[in-house]
Image 1 (cartoon, protein in one colour):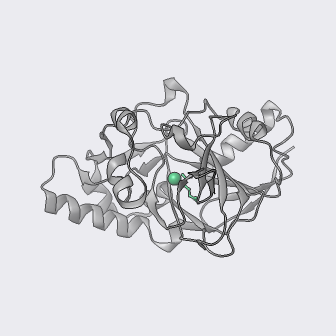
Image 2 (tube, protein in one colour):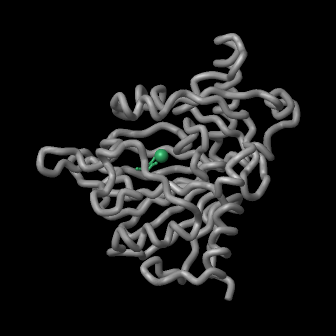
Image 3 (cartoon, protein in one colour):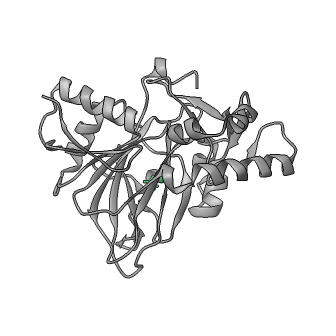
Amino acid sequence: MPLATRPLTDRFGVEISGVDMAAALDPATAREIADLWYENGVVLFRGQDGLAEEAIVQFCRHFGELEIHVRKEYLSETNPELILISNVDEDGRRIGILGDHDVGWHHDQIYQRRPAVGSLLYAVELPAWGGNTAFANLAVAFEAMPDAMRARLDGLRAQHSYAFFNGQWSVPTDDEQTRLTPDVVHPLIRTHPVTGRKAIYADPGMTPAIDGLAADESRALLDEIFEWITRPEFVYEHAWAPGDALMWDNASTMHRRDAFDPASRRIMKRTTIMAPEDRAVPF
Ligand code: OGA
Ligand code: MN
């Protein structure tokens, strides 16, 4: 039976209702969800309150192998496929990453040689104000781009850097994590590993430069691209409720987060979903 869906914007994103993430997922429904995910870039499930970590992990395994994030200090102790995104301190230790400040536009994992295809973020505890997360669909943005601009991007490659992101929006990696996350270069236009659809693959948070261009030329072109891809018509901004689970496609969307009430607790749990090895390349 087709899943019940509701569009999140005119151009992309759907809310899927009638799925209980705590229950076993049959293969046909999993395939239907995967198709909606790749087609839309963002899929939302609401009302999944009280979901056990094990259930989040089991659900996500239907969509690909799960990566253990290099930030091992923020992983769930019982389910390391989950990384905590939080401003909460427990026993003198910050339990999650990204604090209470805003976080600029980025793709999770763009700095990896074999980047993840997706992430699922689950809301456990939310602040009194702020903390919305916005998603830009860069396949839609690419398709709407004027031909002349699109032609200028053809064949270019961009550099991506986790250190560049951390310097702006997060905390530094330790020596081992730094060794595991060297800068990489990927094509500026990415072909989706599953759908074949093309999308801009660069973002203000993690992409310092276009490969092979003079610094000023690279900066000017990136600024022009970023101005285009952050236009409101390509963006969905999500206001969280506890029990929301939002799964996005890292090949064709980027995201950002608003600052939130520093006096409140915000606890989110995230998985990182890999594309099947044989479909992860070419870009
Ligand atoms: C992430 C992320 C945004 C948020 O988990 O990758 O960017 O809303 N989180 O906390
Ligand atoms: Mn992120």
